Image (cartoon, rainbow, N blue to C red; front, top):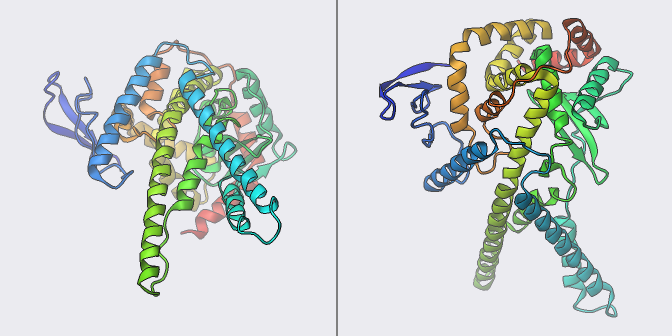
Length: 424
């Protein structure tokens, strides 16, 4: 439930009455005084220390709003920030080269000397480390229900239209799952393009919002997102994997004093190495994610190009109502209703909460600011679109065609309904 509360005083900056939504610390909706305040009750802890979380939040809020100001009204570009992209690519190359050197050295130590010899042990260890630290390029989610063109021809035709409209390649794999989410990515060394549509989300959206969703997700194939590039993706995972590998694990007690001292020293060494690697991972990811957020703004712009500014902004407003969407979909599904009823019930809920939407958009800037967020705050994404030239849709999904697409997915919707019913 969304509650709106009027603050106890006037804004010291402009004199307007402060407001609050969802028990958040009040702020001024006119000049956004106090919007940058750290709200520990509403935020998940990222590091566990309050002073660190406050400090990183302030850094994130400043970086997020500064990036928005720099990008507003300017071409977003598909190539992104040269400095961030270059640093991410160089880091990936160094990490991959380091793992290759580790593997080659390990193999050389294992085979270069006559057996048996003492070099075999470190050689085997180095090869094992290289295998454990190798870059991973993802694989298909086992929960993804892959669709075929014969199974859903109208859905695939719509995907083709949207991809053509924004100049993006069509995905190699299209599937659905049971999450209120959607994603596009690339898996494997061949970078097979995957598009996943969460059924609760897809079924709840209007025609314009569905086109906007496809435009945004397919836009990730051409927006230069570093998380999806073969050359830049290792920087997001390899140092983190190394930190996990060296993280000390407490073993069972026992043994003499020498063994206990050796175990303590070994764990202390592992802890230091693990923390150093983890800090390096955080620094590298936080830098790379600045460019990732720029790519999200561009994906939104591509979404507006195909669905129109109205469809793209409506989609972002729907994202702000994800909790309400989850409740409505679960309620209507248990009552035996399908996506047509999901949409009408959500339209009623959104109409009832229309006056709170501007506050939710502002609050998202506070709630979603993080050094490790791949997406900019939803409110800023919407503001970026409204500050740009208003666009008309180039692809229109009619009600009749939308019903046809839903009819193609009737088996998947029924499977989702059974899952919801069984989880009651």
